[in-house]
Image (cartoon, rainbow, N blue to C red; front, side, top):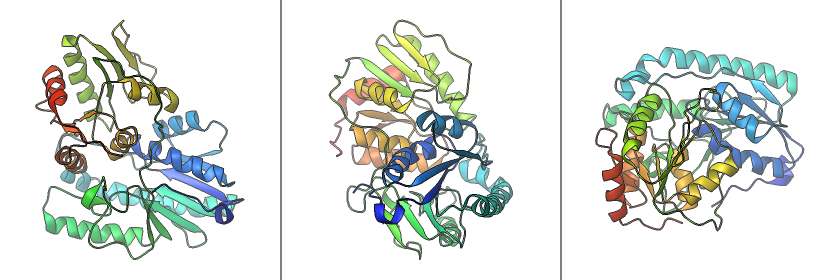
Length: 349
């Protein structure tokens, strides 16, 4: 099921789209949604800061942009759940701050519809507010009871919105599994909007013995993963493209004849690199796996250590043979590629 915007309801309206600032995934999965809204005849405004701002402005250079401070969640080396617990006061403060910010922007710019990707404070009683998430059920490492309590808190925030959009299929195959299809759902209307990817299939040929490595996610794990990749590439004899996930950085890693490094690629160029690669190596963030699903690529998923959502998604994709997966601790480029070549990949879509 693809997202279809009702032109009679959206045409001529002023829309504000706001993705969360945790990595680039929330921004990239909003790209096809933004395009669909534009095609409806609506006037689209964007908001955010830092890397998300840079990425969205590269994709939509003519759209007006408002500065909005992100949650600025930091990912420490400690367990994911404990790490987030320590940052709850900061997150709640950010939610309250963005809620107040939105009230001022609606008064100033007269927005009709708000599309908020995992930004819990961007709701307002005076306009139609849509919350985007694939995690209705958030898994922690603290046990089922803690997960259910967190789900209840999650729904208290989501139910303040007018509608909830879920980037997954309503029926099988559902790619976020229990995360997007829990037994209990929010009390507001929910809509499964299908896989959201900015990429499209084409007829480009796949290069043998070629890999694309996509490095992404919050620090310090982004840099830790990059260092592992740089070390492992010393023993690789094929062609590799490494995307560092740093759209705002000016610091470059020199490319060689066999290995090309990019801080960032726009959608068109990255689309081409994914299609040409024999294997795509990446984290198992949900936006990344949606891209893999859309292009039906042979991929190797390496979940961010301790990030329960990525570990869950990697296991789910491995179990259903949508992708090969290995932990960061056990990752060896040559051995992992050898194992992936023997893996019986399932055709996805």
